[in-house]
Structures are given as structure tokens and as C-alpha cells.
Image (cartoon, rainbow, N blue to C red):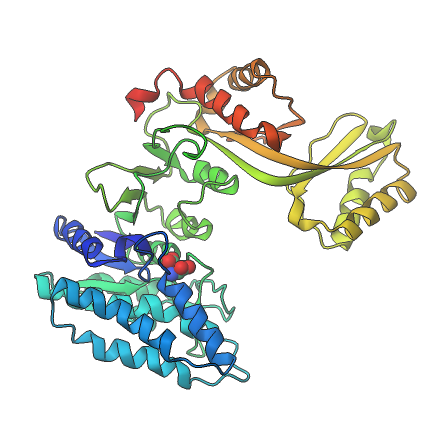
Length: 456
Ligand code: ASP
């Protein structure tokens, strides 16, 4: 039994929907289909979710709504027309879009969520009718009926653990169930969405709930690339990743799957595969609990920009009880999150995202470091990037960091910091942003260069 989720680009047009139908038809184990709202047909197009945001804004601002309503309804109607099925669902879709503009505006913290959720909700109705018309008996099911009960956190819902029992009962359905992604219902019966891109989360929740054998996440790439294709020419896609590796890569800029989507499947011990709707025969990337082979020390190399480091030094810092706590306390008081904390004997750095700081906060940090902690030197360095080499099998290989640093030094890349956690899933380098491309290319060549073609 498989749960199969299709992203917005897989559902953007009639041609894409035909591919989706063929994929579901090809495997009778695909019993649960989770859908996003229709995405962009080309780069100049608008995602239905974004059109709904515009519609919402016009509604609360008291502006004219007719063009927003028409555009959104027409988006679904065009697909029905191009696919040539009766489109009985269009009556309900039209009503649902128009009804949004009758919901109360005042004291309604879930209004935005109700607008946003309509994109997936109506798409699921359309897909279910289309599948049935083409010969796969399918049924649309609303998240409330499916049992997706979530916390009352507008735009940022979380699944309530008690939901899973009800979701499990879905496995008794005879037809293919088509479930809209991206939202659930609160105990008070309010529509509440996950954060943006959250249809991935719904798929993962359903997979965990029905105890699926596999959660398939269909998108528009052949799986997860081992490095950013914008920098590395034609990188290979990774065959297999563990959940922990995926988490590390996602942290450092790999964004194929929503961050929060890993957890339900991971807890339910459900393997996940990322596949391409436009190339369904490609095996894609499997995300598993444990590697099936132990040969590759590094599976992927991620890089992310927008970091700063707060560097300080103080003679005999190591002898001072509570020094680290006092530094962190300064940040806590200023409501600043930090990410990495490399240390030396007499120096300490905090690496954080630059968005956490403002010029006023920076000044305050330096002032307090000097006055309260009496450091010898304190400075804030901007324009940094992180590069992470990731692989669980690193811990059974000697010399991985040596390979990386040798490759970087050959290219004259200066390493501002190196950090490796005790779990040895990744090694992180902090470098100047202007050296990122060079560094990424050097590392890719060092770890994958020779065998790149055979892996592709
Ligand atoms: N349609 C929603 C968004 O654009 C959710 C999703 O596609 O996963 O964020």
C-alpha cells in the first residue's frame, strides 16, 4: 500500500494531470493520492495558492473581487475542458471559491487559512472525478473526514497525535482516496493550514497513519541532487539517503521536501521516495531508516549563505567557569537564535543567520561582551556561508575531513571554522560567501568527480 503525493507542478495542466493518472493507474498499490493546488504552468504563471492570497487581500481590503474569483475558477475549468470530462465538480468548486468571500473578517484568525486551503481542496475534487471518469474508482475526502485534526496555530498547524487512529481506518476504503494536502481541521472545526509547501506534510501524515509500505513524493526533478545544480554542472541524483542525512542536507539549503514532512514518516518507520512526474521510470531518491550499502562516506554536499559569526577571545577563557553560559545569556536576552558554536582554548565563535541581527543588536552584543565579560577582542564577521559534507557512513571511514580540507586548500579556500558533531553525520565548514562556488566545486570533484558519470 502506497501513499502518493503530487506537487503543484505535477498538477498544473491537463498534460500533467494525464501523467499523474498514468502513474496512479500503473500501480494498484497507489491507494492514497495527496494533491497540492495547481502550480505554475510556466515561469510567468501564478500558482493557485498565490492567487488565493491575492483574493484574500482584496477581500479584507474591501476591493473588487470579481477578477480574482474568475481567474481562480477558470484555472480549474480550463483543466476540465482540456481533459474533456464532464466536470460535475465545477459547481462545487465555483461555490467554494465564491463562498470564501462570505466568511467573517473580524475576529477570524483562520480566515487566511480558509482561503489558502481552497486551492488543494478543490483540486482534490477535480482529480477524484477525473480519475473515476478515466476508470480508476476514486473518492475525494475532506481532511476532517480523513481524521487530520491539527493544533489551532493559523498558518503553522501541527498534527495532533490522536489523529492517527482515525486515519488508520482509511485503509479499509475500496476506492482510491484523493486527499487535499496542506491543511487539517482544528478541534473547533476551523480550517488550519501547515506552513507553505505543507502538502508534503499531509502525505507523510497519511503514510504514517495508514502504515503505508511507501510514501512516494512526486515532484519535477529526478530525486535529490548530490549538490546544487545551479553551481555543479549536471550533478548526479542521490539513490539513497537516511532520514538523518536528509535532515542535515535540508538544513543547509536542500529544499526538495518540506522540513516538517520527514517526521511523521520517520516515526512511522515508512520509507519515502522522491520521484519525478515527468520521468516516472527514474528510480528517484529513497529516504530510508538505514543504508542498504556501506560504501559511500559522503552522500551529498550542501551550501547555504547568509551567515555571520560573532568572534571573541579572552586569555585563559578555558579557566573561567560559566563563560559560555554568560555569552549565550546575552543572546537569549536579545531573542537571538544561534546555530553553531566552535571553540578554541581562548576563543569562542557563534555562527548564526544574519537575519537574527540588526545593527542595534550587534552594537549591544559587542558592548556587553566588552563590559560584562571583559573579552580581549570581540568582532562580528559578515558575508559567510556554510558548506556541509553529509554522510552517515563517514564515521566508519578515516580521512574524510582530510580529503575535504585538501581539496579546499588546493583551491586556496580559507576555512574560517570547521565543526563536526559527535554523531559524525556531517562536517561543516564556514567560509567567505565569495568562495562558496569554488569550494563546492572542489568538494564535489574530490568526493564524486571520478565516479560521477556512473552514478548519474
Ligand atoms: N499550495 C501550497 C503552497 O503553495 C502547499 C503545497 O503546495 O504544498 O505553499
